[in-house]
Image (tube, rainbow, N blue to C red; front, side, top):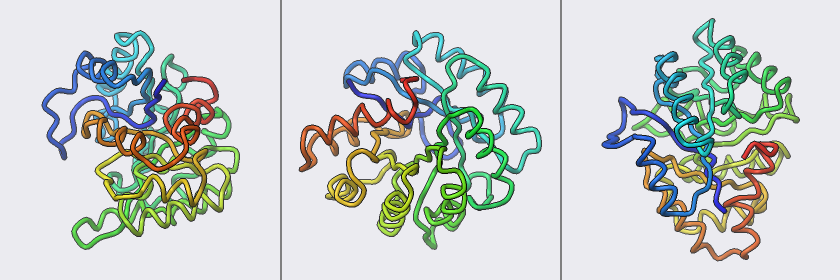
Length: 255
């Protein structure tokens, strides 16, 4: 069985997405043996919250529960926390997504405190975008892995998943370092992160128990990340952790 901890619903203004239908997502999952996936709706990330909420609930129902859901917290919007709570009271929502780079708010900003408090009360994980800083993409300064130290340390009972495992070379190193220092920090393999030996490096640094399979579907073809895991020079038990067991633990049986 394979569990995908990082997927998307809907379309993004930043990426080409020719077919984001639930039917196609399920067909792709069936072809690859992915039993369940946890998805964040693009509309929620970009401020169209009601549209994202409605289509997320419809996707969960249409999939027979195979597509589970992240709600999205935007620290720059005063009403965002109440919207997150509304989602967590709705069947199918099992985690919270934050994206400091899209929302232009450093991950250690005071405005994130309330969502970490909520995650601790509700016992749900937080998935975040994490990435390396570059001159070509300066907005990634908001999401560099070191920025998550404050809240990871302050809320040790909240599981934090660093999406993309830091994104690029220095980000990967920083993400592994943070996960090594904090028992509640995990990484996922989603995104166009195709470094040779990345899976082996992460397993060597932090153990296979802290690495989750994520595809970034529908932005990315899941075969790329799945192939990275299946072809990695790691034991079969480590692959089982990455593809299934870790997500089951992090989501406390919701998957």
